Amino acid sequence: MLEIKGVYKTFNAGTVNEKRALNGLNLTLADGDFVTVIGGNGAGKSTMLNIVSGAYTVDAGTITIDGQNVTALPEHKRAKFIGRVFQDPMMGTAATMQIEENLALAARRGQRRTLRAGITRSEREEYREMLKILDLGLEDRLTSKVGLLSGGQRQALTLLMATLKKPKLLLLDEHTAALDPKTAAKVLDTTEKIVDRDHLTTLMITHNMRDAIAHGNRLIMLYDGRVVLDIAGEEKKKLTVEDLLEQFTKVSGSDEADDKLLLS
Image (cartoon, rainbow, N blue to C red; front, side, top):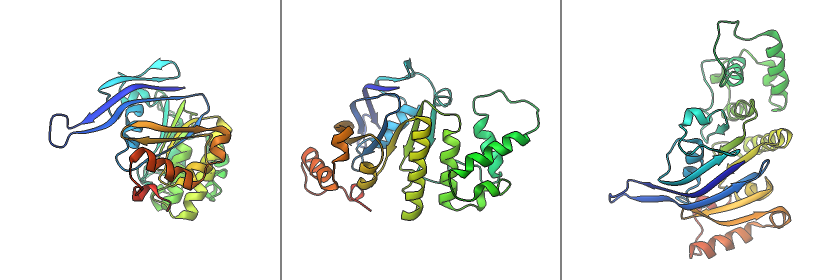
């Protein structure tokens, strides 16, 4: 479903601030893979998601989604393949619009706009059923402005919107990092339910090693812009936080793990 092949990306090339973010990155995801991604600051995690989504162009290499080479495709054209949730809960929704209006926008993604009535009665019922999976009571607040919701409620709604059209690829960029632990756990549980239900191919960046181990069928570690660890199946289920810290020490040559790589 996703193939990243020999990708390089350097920022501020030729200046004193030159930074090679991706260094010959190779990664292949099978259809339905749920991959958690860990790594220290500057390892290339967010850059990887940005080159997949088309927010950044690559210096070299190719990106293929479901057999189609999208390397030269601009971000807005890749949007029909991709759902994405960012770290900031404010980024994925329109605050001044109602919950049902936000869902309607997500449902109409990639379609031609017409002058028909905005939301039909059947759509409203459909949205009410969809919201029940979040278990936040939002199905009874369809006409509430999204700006009135808490950060966790907005992030859960963003997740629902990003997966509404069943994208070929779901990108989660530390989507629970800005939430309190209880809310983060709820959003992660909902994420797992939706990904499993719709068999979505998913890349999830997290700084929490426990979450990286607990969720998904595969775990990769990035260091210096490339994949240095790739664990799946039974081997992943047996992983411990101590195992991951030991691996980080091996690849980084330091026994001081990056602060943000440690558990919260």
